[in-house]
Length: 227
Image (cartoon, rainbow, N blue to C red; front, side):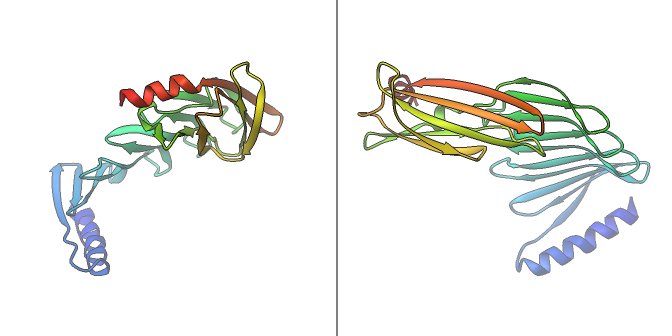
């Protein structure tokens, strides 16, 4: 542990010199763990049999950050992202040989929305869940325009695309736009549009996954009034 503390001290000193007045402290939280603290962030490291077994890099105020765990041979075991201390967005779990084992997607509330499993040779195995997610308290209404933030999974090696169809009260299409992205905001003129249909396709070679979701604009406006 003394050796690792010395190495980390060198890293911290170098970081501090690069960031001006930033001050780092090193805390030995247990026999096999260390924490590097600055005013805004902390970096926690755990060791097992002389090797780093996990790293957690978290912002003190927002509780946003990332974590990594490692196998005894040093290869990556998993990676997670955090928002307000909750797992969000894409998460990755790996086989010991380095190939991806499981891809998970959590919405911005921390709810598991999509799961994709892989065989040890890296090929697609199975999937479950939905592609189209949104957070009710992130919807905004301003000057008769509704902003609907959409978040979607995008596993490595895949392409995702969506067609957004604006509809009238009889579900007749009025206009449409296309997104080639996993995260985007839809702007909706609430006095002109009654419904919104999102048609999404996730592609990886010969594997296609489709997900459609229709929104009532009046219901979305009601959600805004609740938050």
